[in-house]
Every structure is written in C-alpha cells, then in structure tokens.
Length: 110
Image (cartoon, rainbow, N blue to C red; front, side):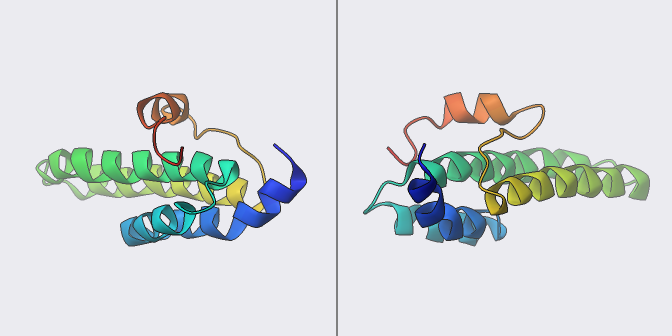
C-alpha cells in the first residue's frame, strides 16, 4: 500500500469508526474509488459495530452495572485502537477479532 493510497483514504477510514452511520457513509464514499486503506478500516469498523450490537443485547440482559461498564470499556478500547491506527496511517487489525473481520467481510470495499 502506497503513501498516496493511505493519504487519500485516511479521512474515510476515520469516518468509518464514528458510529454505525459513519461506517455506512464511509462505505458509500469509498464505492467510487475503492481505496484499499479505507476498505481495510471499513471491514474493521463494520465488524466491531456488528459485534457490539449483537453481543451488547446479550450483555444488557445481565442487569449488572459492572458487566455493562466492562462491556463499554472493552469496546471503547477496541474502537480507540482502530481509530488511532486509521489516524496514524497503519493497517493493524484490532486485537482478538480483527483478522476474523478481514476474512468475514473480504468483499466489503472490493
């Protein structure tokens, strides 16, 4: 991946981590140029958001503020990691599930 590709795709990659709507907006903005850097971060952000909502529903059933707080802190750290890698122009997958998201959503952005 060239420095030009990273520079051109950085703003859309950052947008993808800003709420699920940001992910959708970044997806449509990336549809024309198909930037490789943006596509990488789209797959990461989409995976994080879908996992957050799917498992968050289950976590909400525990009725414990400690479990809920831990859940938000855990995903806050993962989203922060993804956002920092997008801002710094790196393509490091998020810990734990990042490689899985890249394989699962390989058609996103291509």
